[in-house]
Image 1: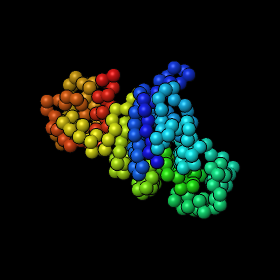
Image 2: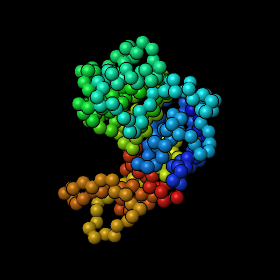
Image 3: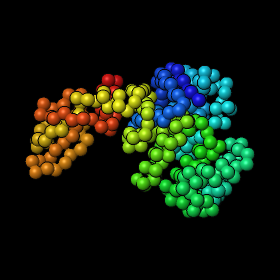
Image 4: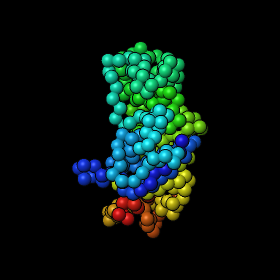
Length: 288
């Protein structure tokens, strides 16, 4: 399944413009990280991709066919975890997944539910009522329902919220394995969730696409714009210099910063993906 997005705009009835002239291509197989700060337009884009919203203008096409003409077929092969996913607290995990399988039209759903429960490590909780689950366990139930029916196109909107570090690592690896033969879109504002597994990144801010490409290409954009330097007490603060860390040393406080123009005393260092993301977001904001 390949998706093309052409000149997509979305303005809500309130007048808020959530997306501005978005053009993208997403090809299967791939694991795509959709990055951006809160309110950047990520969730709106996800809702448009699953036909939960209609765009103000522009077009989304699936394998060359406009989404409006193939919505039913697309949804049959879709697994989707929205950012705010409602659960029926009085149902058990099994009952809820059985209900979701029925909504998806999955026949002989027992095997599909067993596979989803196994994949999300919910075997010991299959008979537990959802109201008794922890936040992380509830999030796993949401991921499990997205896996029902072995979809070829999966969208996860902030999927690791509420998961502990060990669970987050396990699910990042799981998403990576799934993307070997599927199109998987992982929307997040957590750099750690994409830096080691995504082969393509899309960075969005204020409804505009700032970057599409590989993590390595994004890092290269920040070369020469990340450095370390000793903090100078009483020095005038530079609003265009973004400090990412401060470390106490025997010589004083060692700072790491990102800027279009670093202080003269800064020693340039190799940027991380987080440095590159911050540089892109702040530079994009200054350009607007």
